[in-house]
Image (cartoon, rainbow over all chains, first blue to last red; front, side, top):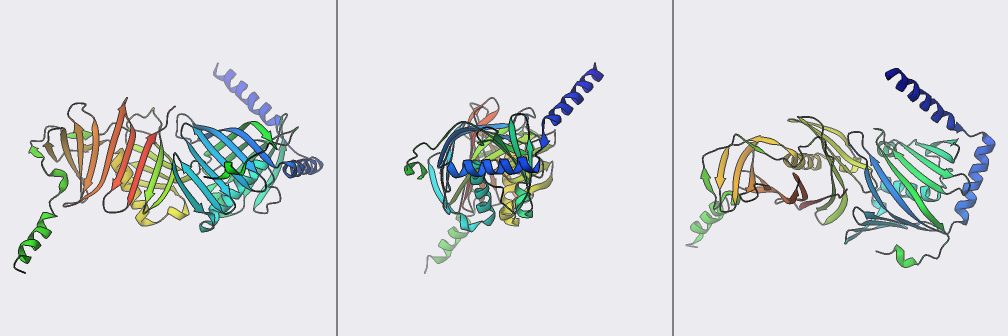
Amino acid sequence: MRNLILIISIFITISLNAQESKMSSSETENFKNQIKKVSKETKTITSDFVQFKHLDFLTEDIETSGKMAFKAPNWVKWEYINPYEYSIIFKDDVLLINDGGTKSDVKMNSSKLFKKLNQLIINSVTGDMFDNEEFEISFYKTERFNKVILKSKDKKLSNFIETFELYFNKETGAVVEVKMIESSQDFTKIIFSNRVDNSQLNDAIFTN
Amino acid sequence: MRFLPISLFFLLFGSCALQTTKDLIAEDVSEEYVVNNYFSNPEKDYVYKAKIEVYGNKFGGILIIKKLSESKHRVVFTTEFGNKLFDFLYNRDKFIKNYVVDDLDKKVIINTLKNDFKLLISEKSKVEKQFDSKEFKIFQTSENKRNHFYFFHKKSNELEKIISSSKFKEKVAILFSNMEDQCAWDIAINHKNIKLKISLKKLKK
């Protein structure tokens, strides 16, 4: 019985790996062009998201969920609704935070690392982050998704997040999943759903 | 001027009496150990939304506590996005700093956090003295140069607060409320000598 399970699990591992392969250089070019085009045409995005925080010592991942709104060129509102209310707005050089009614704003200039991290989060929403020289970037494809792995070259950032993994819908070029992996291999996974592009978004959404 | 010596006396000694034990009646020690059960189940993930206020600056995050074995607790603090800010391991009296983000990695900050969370999670401590009041049974323990007072409500038998003090002054108070199923759903950690407040609210499943 134990052998059977072992054989099955080896088989599953092989078949999962087989599903993912490296893009050829022409596929990579095509994919990059698709994402550039999509990100250029995307003026606004609204989407639901579910976030899973995985820590190896926990029995269950910590699940939180909410809504995200983006307005070009660089406004992002990240709003957690369940199981607590917390929103954070990235707006130019300021962070506007509403922590269950407690409002505050943080100037991003104070922390270079924080600024960089926020820029990455914004970029990962649109997916346009491949001209970044701070990362070693590799491109993969699976049956349903295109996948990009970004490994941080900056030591300070990689202490915080070592690798970003972005999953793109092959047809639309939309980011469907972001995984931020720490050097300890603990990770945060964000899955987007119900994405709507280019609807009218009032500026008032991006105020605290 | 005539009153100076007596005012000085009050200043010196009036303020020196420890507030915590004022109006408490000392009694014989009846329990060998005092037990804090709020983080004692290794099958549970204790996950709290945290709000921290330090010298007027407010920020939030997620506090995660897990009992790993009889002697070990892991205490991790992350941002709402899930990025780790610090990661501590307590193994009896040993303390291991697994990770601390650069901006927080300062001795005075780490020591404060280390002591606060040790006080919060410590499960079993030897009782040195015992007190009684109208509402509470109080157990005093000691650690290094600090005394800790555990207040158990007489009616509910629940631990409602821990006060940590030096010989003369209260330093930290931890208040537990909304207890259910051996969990405290709301916790407040208030410092008396520095402007630091941590409030914790347990996340609903």
